[in-house]
Image 1: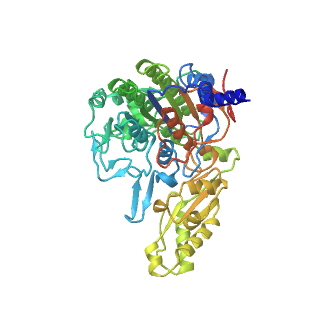
Image 2: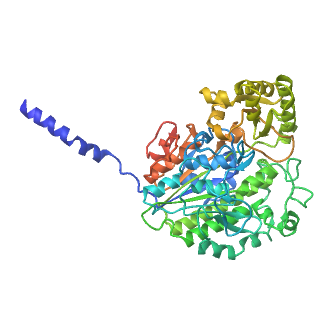
Image 3: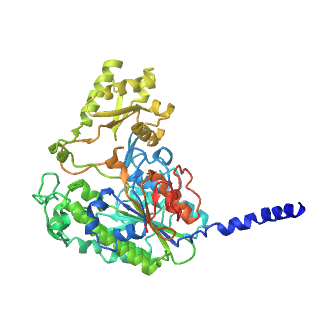
Length: 557
């Protein structure tokens, strides 16, 4: 009996060692995490165009990486500023505060852009107010990485849009740079750097935008590559200024002067993607990103797909061609990372800041649900209705981004209860054609919603930057029945985005389980062994982190 007792005690003492032996060795921390955002990319672009992609771009990410096929934005509105902020903070506008690309400030009685910062100045050129992440109320993945490494990690963000650079960069980045469309230079602000570093100055001196402004955009491939898109000549596109029809080819040398003295045609064509990749490669060469054992972060955001999508729409030949060319840019970036950082030393995630609707004119022509909604008519009607109910006065202050703002000082002077005025306004809006959902600020403050649109509205709700009544249109409805695409709703065409993982710590596989966009930051934090961003509400994606099968996931053989 004593022998059995001693044997059992020995096993108990040895148990931790046995468990430690069974525990798989965690993958090494990547030397560089590269976050790639493609502005306005829908997941169906991967499946529609995949057979025309080459082997070294998107197909390499799919072949060697992990794909999350059911990734959704879990808030409204689905636009660029909140999208980039949510990916890198791991939370929704309710906590990071970026409720739109801009919002109405009641105190200032004017619109505020999401990266406005009057306390800093632009660096390297540009006009207007300074840019920073000061309006973003949560730390980011990069901020936490800086703190976890005692400031040794390098964090860099690059884009053609300032908000797509500053918001991912966060508050502690070593640099955030974006394109000044007027001059063609990449610039920054004193929030990040006192002056442009030598590698950025050297890149600007090359005048790459001048080269791209002289190019002619013609189809990259033969007709068979565009069989899943509409014919080149159709009525669903907006042509470039100075061009009668939205058809190939686009001679930028001729069209650029008609768009002004800047580089708008480069930004609004496929060559904006080339320019950003050029700049990213210059960053890899000009800095020590991924060169030591301290993990670094490079945030890239390709902005031109958004401009092309707005002008030509998801079914266009131009959109198709842009993704065939973006595939080559992804391959070029991967090749540069292999060379500078080394295969197996870096990890990538690729996603989008939002999707896009079909062109409303296309939907109407094909008898699909759609409609036109006039915000001007809504504002006039709402003001008249409040006058009927409360007496003549300026009860409605303004309408911005599907939000109506009441004149609260007037309500206080006239002793009208705010909740009553909000409800009156909501009742009027709810009766208008094209309205799917209406909520007052009081409702969003006091209730907890789980239903589809209401839950997304509540996740997008940050009280100091919100109106008194927020409405959502019916699926397919937008400002007019016209050409070009739009986005911003909570519906699947805007909320469903691709999510690909690739590189160090990632086993090939695919998941069909539902995941929120806010799950990206905590997943990346686990890979980096870093703390979660301060307001993070997402959860790590187990299928990505585990080398074995997990619920909803399957690993490729």
